[in-house]
Amino acid sequence: MTSLWNDIITNNLVAARKLFLPISAYGHLKGISTPSYDWKFRLMALFTLDFASYHHVLTAGHVATLQSIGVRPSYAQWIPPGYCENRLGYWHMPGPRFIYAQNGATRSVGVLSLISWHGIWYLIHLGPNPRSANVGQLYSPANGPGVVGPPGSC
Image 1 (cartoon, rainbow, N blue to C red):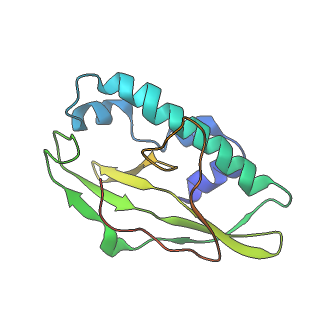
Image 2 (image 1 turned 30 degrees about the horizontal axis):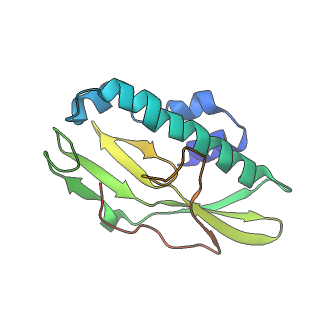
C-alpha cells in the first residue's frame, strides 16, 4: 500500500501497474472465456482512469502526506473456487484505506480490493466496481479516517 501511495503521488503509473494482479494470474483465477480481454479492457482500463483521479485529488493544492494505512486483517476472507466467476480460490482483502493529511485536514480514501496470489497481495480494484460509467472514481473518500471495508464481496 505504501508503494501504491508513492506511485500515485509521483504519478508513476508504470510502477503502480507492477502492484496490480498480473494478467497471467488473472487468467488462472477466472472462469471466463476471455480473461486477457477483460483484464486489459476492463480492469486495467479502469485502474488507469482511477489512478489519474487519485493522483489529481491527492496532489491538488498541497500534496497529501500519508499518515497511516487502515486495514482490518480480520476482514480477509477465502473466496472459494466457483464463487464470483473464479476457477481457483484466493484470499481477498476488502477496503484498506489511505489516511492522509492535506490542506490542514485529515482525510482518507479507500482501495476497493486486494487479492493474494502465491502469498503476495496485489491490487485488483482501486476504485468502485462495478460502476455506471467508464470514468475514474475514488472509492469511499471521507473527511477523517473513514471506515475500512466493508467485509465480504469478491
